[in-house]
Image 1 (cartoon, rainbow, N blue to C red):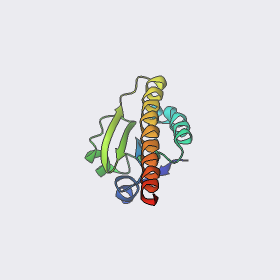
Image 2 (cartoon, one colour):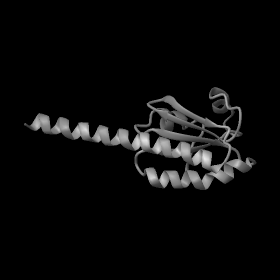
Image 3 (cartoon, rainbow, N blue to C red):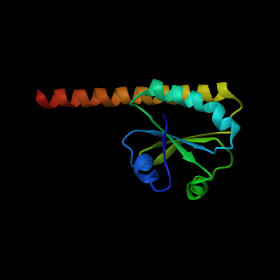
Length: 128
């Protein structure tokens, strides 16, 4: 299940999140949005606790759509520490999106391993 985020909850759920967040801007009338939804759920299942996935209805959250200058739907934004790190839009197909998601997953799973290893090393150093 994808957490639905609105203008009211966007700051807390996305910009202030301790985890990187993949924001899916979509709309109920968007056919491509429905087509990519299973890929996003699969991505969420594979990433587990490393990357948070949220959905934003662009029609109901016009200010957010304007703030992030949406040109087409779906548009995916990878937000880390309140900063947009990646923008995915204009998909040529499912494979195009799958490859982009795979690259994000690899980048962030490696980063979280480095982070957890450095925390472990820091704890070992302090206890020595």
